Length: 383
Ligand code: PMP
View 1: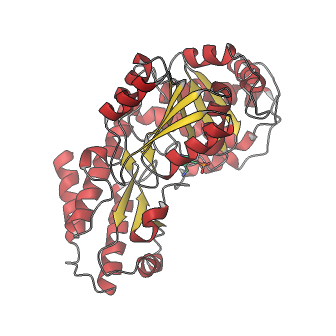
View 2: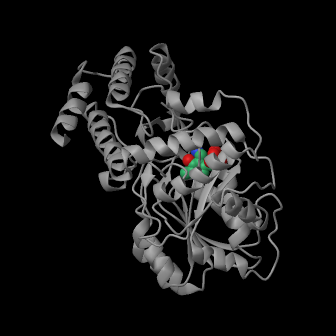
């Protein structure tokens, strides 16, 4: 139940368990081409340029920064946790001068503060995290993307913990880059960096004055490959992880069959019920309000007097593995539970049962079954 890698659908795993085709085999070319088309549907970016490259989510961040930033460019980074800091580090790697707007723990940066920063200088890019997996804080991307556009900056959304789980309308909201990794709500084992760039972002890259300072991430190497697969032609730059891409096609098809609106709704309904259940146990959520609480994971403070490591160990006895804290400042004080992708209400009922037993065993007062009742009532109310 950690926030990625998540549990994968059996069909997705089965798609990997086949003989590895050549990356120029006609059937594989078709699968790659289909995957790129399906990405545009999931990202809601019909005219976007998709990229699928072997690597983790961090490579997708690296690719956005390497291709869009030149030495000396100004970059605004809006941080709601650990991964905001990572984006700052990556942008600086490519010579950007960064301005970091850091939200207090469990909060978001106000739109006023963002606009005030944008008025200070001409930023080339505004980078922000949709769901910071370290805090479970959800940022609403649309108004930030609109502000970036108003001030003529490119918007880059780290959607590693949100794409295919939270609502994203890349094209309608005019977000220039939306990136993720395969192992979260996309529902494919780790190993794919996934990114969709707007035509505006592609034009900014094309008009660069200096070469891209990263060989593997350079779009000059990857764009012809993506274009070729989209046109169902063989191509090569670096050998693609063939079996992962077979799995990607299956997972994207399943996501599209569920429908983006329904999928987002399912994540919202489950997250809301889960939050209500957690609060009913007397535990506090890390995000300071419901409107900024992620639907892909929950970050929760351990109750006063409970030893976190002991609680997690107790849950392991019930076969439930949860994640500890990630944000250095408060690492030992909270835990995280992922609920994205193929997660069901049954999974979360099992988690709540295990959590109640663990808390009870450690002396936290729990009325057994109470959080399961709250969870179910919320689901029934929202049905
Ligand atoms: N951004 C966010 C919001 C993440 O949650 C993660 C991974 N937890 C990353 C970036 C980095 O992705 P990866 O670990 O796949 O490199």
